[in-house]
Image (cartoon, rainbow, N blue to C red; front, side, top):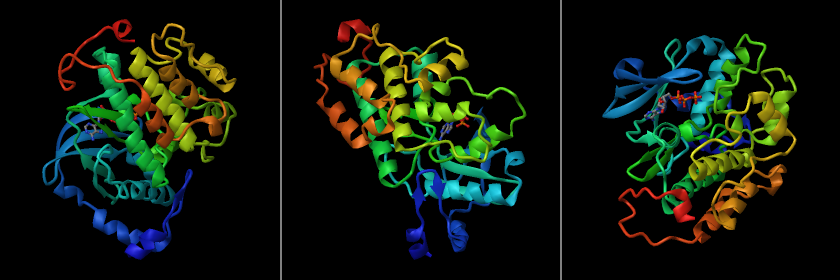
Length: 323
Ligand code: ATP
């Protein structure tokens, strides 16, 4: 069984899962009855996350079965889940198991007790000093570098999917995007049905294929490079406290990004090196974007400011005072 698992590969956007391997899923099956469900944490695009108990605190993402009724979609869900179980890294959420028996489909992970970067940046308006900003970016790059080394593309890297708990970064929701996309495609709507705050993470090549009305079972061109583009946007959020193209309508963002235009950085008071990272990640040409190993290298080289207090103690400096 484990030998079979070794032959399984996930290439860019094309998970392969030999039929026999369905057997090996059993060890990850959690009978739904064993889960003690607690309060709801929130609802996302294709499911609802609950607090739960299963040998301790867990997060249970219950999927909306309406979207997963047919055999093919269920198989795809299992494929997506199979990408989870290959991950062991301290900056990635811990996959604990899944309930695979319809109509109960759920993914069980460790419960993140901290806030998401989204909450820190956009709701609480927390200001991170440059050292903390760099440190968070380094941890994201570590986790993402690991995912990429495993051949897994996140496809949905964004500040909502990054938790910070006691200074430690934990990335969630990797590799589940195809299931999400199916729901997205199922939507009966003339518009693109784009969730808010999603667009600015999409690379030009993805933007351009969104634009062309592709049938919904056709893959969007996600790649390691499109993950790097999304990382660029997170880096921008960390630096500026807002999303790029803030306040602009979706059509304007799609058009600009598709044409290779970028959010201007004139108002960003940061060093050249900091801006260079941003511009490289946002390169129009995917092959011009750095990989996470190179990004880590660049982040490591950013000058460290000496702090008057311990770095674990939050200090709120105004951005201009720091840069
Ligand atoms: P989207 O569907 O667009 O990705 P989302 O990220 O808000 O939006 P979900 O991933 O379904 O949607 O998450 C719903 C809520 O549950 C969010 O508030 C999220 O922060 C929270 N959540 C998700 N995973 C965990 C976890 N492992 N621990 C704690 N909370 C979590």
